[in-house]
Length: 499
Image (cartoon, rainbow, N blue to C red; front, side, top):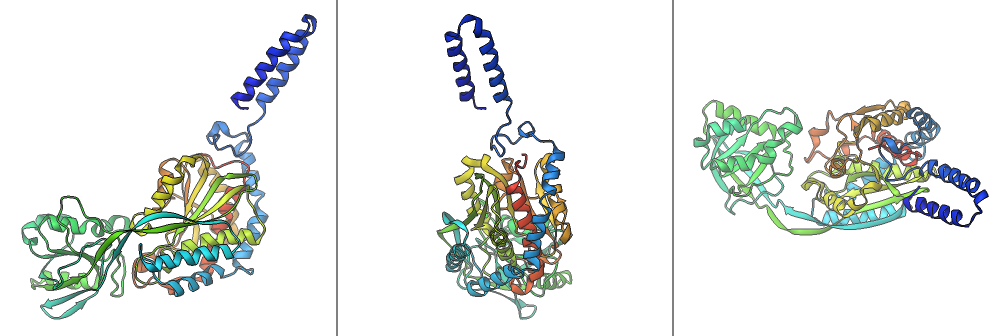
């Protein structure tokens, strides 16, 4: 009951007290007090966005478990449609047509503009609701032509991919001796040797999360000791002479130098030569250029909720990619299984109580730029968001869901994941964040990401190898089924996911 309702009830009592005869006053007052008490004890409406802590829930956990278990038949229908029915391989075929038509989609590029227009039209043709574009500003960097040539001790062409935001070399390039190091510590220890040289990092790959610091900060650390440029062994456990690109960051007050990634093979070649005392000289040429921020859009579509339309279950992937390969795995697969989740529900005539919202982010590869602007625009209604979900680590064989939230929320997610028993993807893992959804998670909204077999993910990540050949239609079917079941049940349960 609201305070206003309570006040109206109290005013009603005062009026009655003034008008009743004294011998009936106590009886009538008792009746009204009983009625008022009854109204006050009525449960608040389910799905109230202001009642998300433990005190706002009216049913015990066991009752919620039973409700979730009752979705078993619906979950099986979604799974059957995605894997065996007429939607079989649909997300794969849609993705193949998209990436074969559009190609890679670098932030600020014409290809990204084309991709957004393509998806806007496709989502409307699919019959989804409230399809629209939300404008944002994103970085615009282009690599231009680039090359690296070893000229001592012999001629050898080195495969490179300039890193996002890198500056160019002079038109004639940079010709300099190489200093090979295995870590930042070694670089600092050999600082006197680095001046005027091209620093080559041959760091050991531990994990992407730990080793990526060399890509991000390699140029800055090399510049601090007077290097002319930096080349970083690609941040991957495996390559076939394939460098991987990605974002790097310059530091205020530190001279900017050109920077690129090279293949594992070339980094290790130079490390072996250096260990023998062989002098290495390279010529590096890069035409990279940064332009003013470009206009772009986050792409949005929905299935509007039947009972609590203002409450949002958000599923997402990012539409932009780097300018190599096709961006099929990173993150075409995640974007398209998120779209497929809504398509599956629409095909089955399922309209959840809450709104299921698809967002295809832009500018993710530059640090979640589009998602940050979306967050700033919508955080005024943060209490309306039930959960934010992002698929951005491949769409390989799914094992379950990575989740970030309270213990109460995690217990509910474990019950929901039991519905995925038919495809053996019932796990609930830690760390359910993602670049585009972390803004919400930091403010306490539960977050989830697809947890799949990433064994080969970093083989192709940010490289020319990220093409449709990496994708497997059956695995995409499984991922779409998981994504659809989880998002639908969360959106349709009477209670909300606790924060």
